[in-house]
Length: 181
Image (cartoon, rainbow, N blue to C red):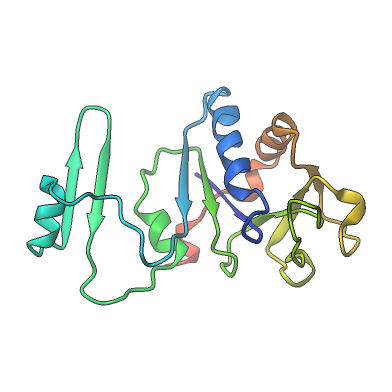
């Protein structure tokens, strides 16, 4: 599997970019998984549902599946900080791409999503000048990047070109779990 993290500040367009890349990669016959960093208060279960009741009763894990979907919920007894590598290890091994949203401080190779300040977006500093794991920058304002770079600067709005860049460079993103064990 190939793994690439998409990093940038809130509002920069990471989710929108990943949401657009998924069908572009799927159209090429590739299977895509996503790992997303969430804040501590998220939940995907609903009060009254059987799975919620099982969790509330104290089950450590609840797996629910149908012919179309599988969900695993794990309830930690105390706060647990999982690395992005722990989460990738939970994924089906037969995927072609894992697109990771967030995990800015991880040791994964990353594409930074960067936008210049505008009327709609306050702007934020870039990560790439201080992060050797950033291998490319996706932006809609290449002429306003805060520092020049030798990294590829890709058009944030050209999804086809971004998908082709991923495929053309996929050998760089082959995930080797033994390096993180």
